[in-house]
Image (cartoon, rainbow, N blue to C red; front, side):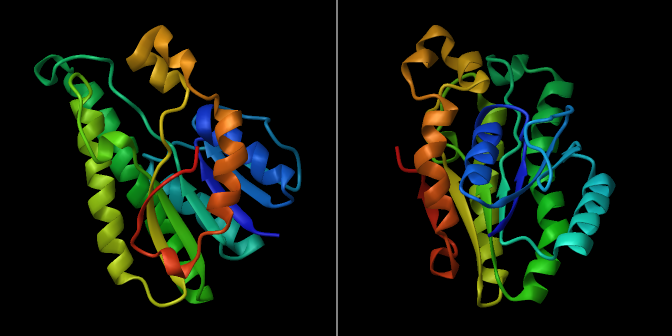
Length: 220
């Protein structure tokens, strides 16, 4: 049984991954900004904003004290701006996307990686996007954060000791609320999160030190 940390478990990919991980017999230690009763004990669901660094640190310390270092961290929580050219994106909206998509990833890494390094094993997956490797109009803030995740993850991979891995993951195009905000009705032509998770979760659970530094794309 693996101990798997999943951020953003209340909806979309996070919710689907948590359910599939649990169904495969692994322990899910999840968080989301809103209360989530997705899974019952022994799994744990916490109300947490990953953009709140001190709160993330307390959450991680509590989990590590009781369960030990996680085997897999799925840094999934993210926001996207409302479709608009960059000069029309409100300051507060740009800041919120950066706070969750970049600072949140850093806070989770800062909180969990020391215990994983001490344990000498573990995989840290930072969720990127097709828009972390390309770009489209009206989602510039989101693109900027996901390009940042690609660079952050590659640098982290160079820093980790043997036995650990840092990976960036493009999940592909999935019919989530986030995609619907960009694609509108055409989002419904893509796979649902649950359909995606059936293939993606076994793939993620098999990641190991051999994958350190890779920019991967989930199977579809």
